[in-house]
Image (cartoon, rainbow, N blue to C red; front, side, top):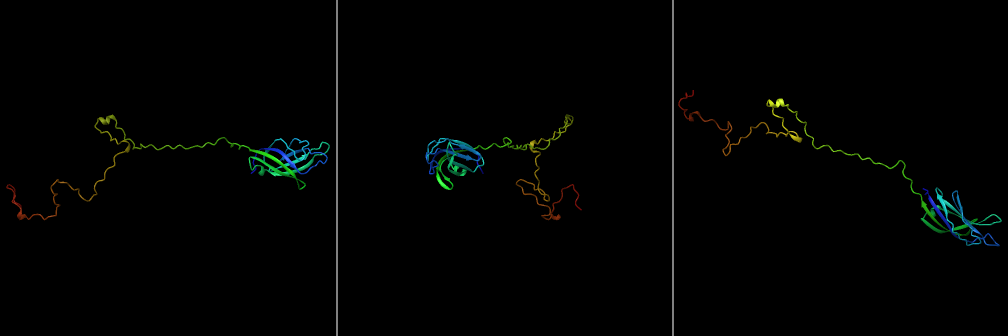
Length: 224
């Protein structure tokens, strides 16, 4: 992905091995191209093969992958002569925020010198998200009330209360008390007699013989 931002390029100096002027010294200048943007340095008049510059070029980098660097010899009476050129990958320049290195120049496939460049790249800030800030809605949980009693009993009118009707029992918020289950059916409840033993169950012992029974008290007819 191509990185957008501002690219500042400073041509510092050059060491040329090719000379285009035989009777005088060259007047070199530097031409740097980034996409459709071109910027030219000042002319180092009479600098010959060892020119230096103090220019600073500001480029707007978008989708470009390379920059072109060329050193020309200025001629006032004829066309300018190309001394050397090079194509530099942007990735090499962006390998460090502040880059400074020598670049080899060539002319028709042969080395013609070196040029020193210094660069600074500042990436663009990311654009804010469209649609405004994101709002997160949180659902509020409402707990159920703890006081969930039984419905209230109907109120007895004062007329009926005057006739002797008792008021309905009040059980508060927890409802009527739960009845305690009784003993299982089938067995009679056992009665407590204190320290005396319980009477025997009927049928446990045979009834006494009638001859051994004491005579009934006077005043009662004898049994038949």
